[in-house]
Length: 95
Image (tube, rainbow, N blue to C red; front, side):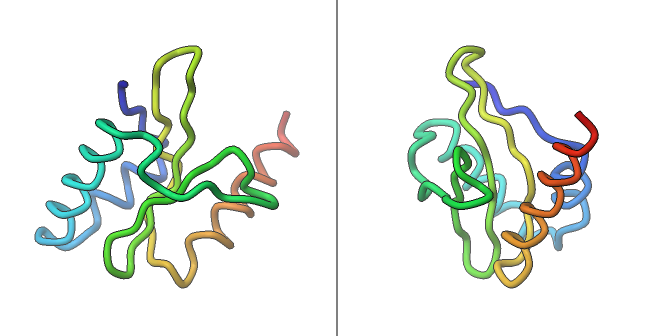
């Protein structure tokens, strides 16, 4: 499956320290090879999955029809789910 990055995820990955960035890229390859690797999320983030590396989380969605994996947000565990929910709510308001 092809990985598609949101603008936010691109910026977040770019701003990571080099060692962390490399490990996140390895986790992204693992997600690409096995999209169901991460845990299924619920509540506001139903339909999304999360994969972990130390204190970081990657929140993503599998788009079966287009054979893509949408990388939504890459952030520390402490804030990732709250920020992902907030961003999703903002997007829904715009549509």
